[in-house]
Amino acid sequence: MSDKIPFDFDEYIRQSEPDKQQKGYIWQTAIGLQDVDGVYKFAGMIRDYNISKKEWILKGKSLVYAGADTIKDTLNYDFDLEKSFDYSALSIDESLKHITGFIANMWQIHPFGDHGQ
Image (tube, rainbow, N blue to C red; front, side, top):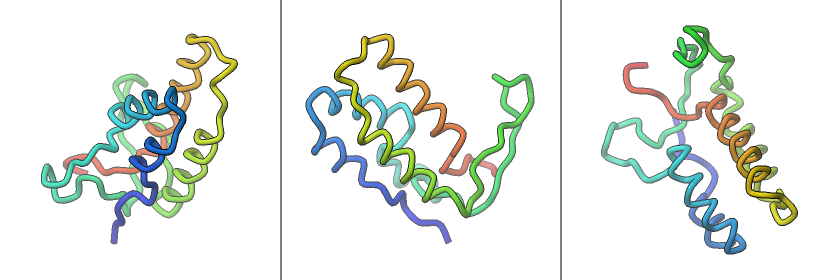
């Protein structure tokens, strides 16, 4: 049985420094953690099955996505790293590079199911 995401992203944003708050709202939208209840019955639920799928950006190849049994631990690990990351000495370009890496990690974890899978 799937569980709702174990990380309280809204609380993380509220407790963050002001510059992290703005980035947090962007991440929340970018990685799809906004409240989507009612869109699909599985929306917002962590998948409980393994996936592979052809990605157009990879010319039809599939990533190795996180296994269903590792999603929660992997999310917690990545969010803990991000929560403690210090952006204060980074330029905007360096910050964007870091955020891009974080989002890429979320894409590869792919915690939520897709319609039709």
